[in-house]
Length: 220
Image (cartoon, rainbow, N blue to C red):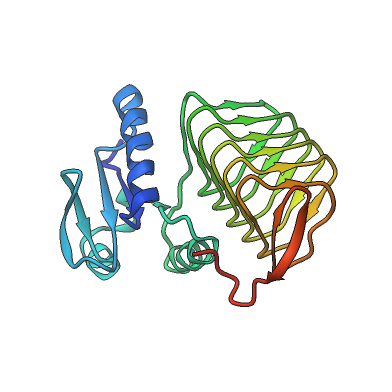
C-alpha cells in the first residue's frame, strides 16, 4: 500500500483527543504512516510532536491520494463547514472508531464520524455523516443521529429516537425513547428530555424545557 497520512482538521481539545484515539488505533493496526493536524489559527509547527499546517499549506503539499482527513472540532456548525469544504475539494474523510466501543453489527456509522472509547451503539442505530460520539455514551436501538451532531460524554439516548442535523447534546443528558430532537437544537448538560424538542432551540432541565431560540445556530 502507498504511504497514507491521517490529518485531523483542528488542533484544539477535541482534535487532540481524536489524535489520542487514532494513535492508539495506529499502534495496533499501523493504518497510517503519519498522524498530523490542520489548523488555520496557527501558521505552522507541531502539536504533540506531530506536524501541523494550515489548510492552504496542506493542499499545496499533499496529494489527495495520500491523505485521509477527519474533522476535529466540537462545534456542530464548524463540523458542517469543514466537512463540506473537504468534500468539495475532493478529499477522503475517514471515520475514527475506538476499539473499546461496542457497536452492533446492524448499526451504521456514516463517513467521517468519530466514536470515542467505551461508547455503546445498539442494534439498527444510525450515526450519520460527520458525527461526534464522545466517551461513555449510549445510543439505543433504531435511533438515528443525523449529520454533524455532537453527543457529549455519558449521554444516554433511548431507543427509536431521532436526533436532527447539527444537534448538540450536553454531558450526562438523558433522552426518553421515541423522542425527536430538532435540527440545530442544544440540550443542556444533565437534562432529562421526555418530549419532542423543536428545531433551533436551547432546552435544559428536568424535565427539559425550551428556554430560548438558538438563533445563531451555534453552541460555543
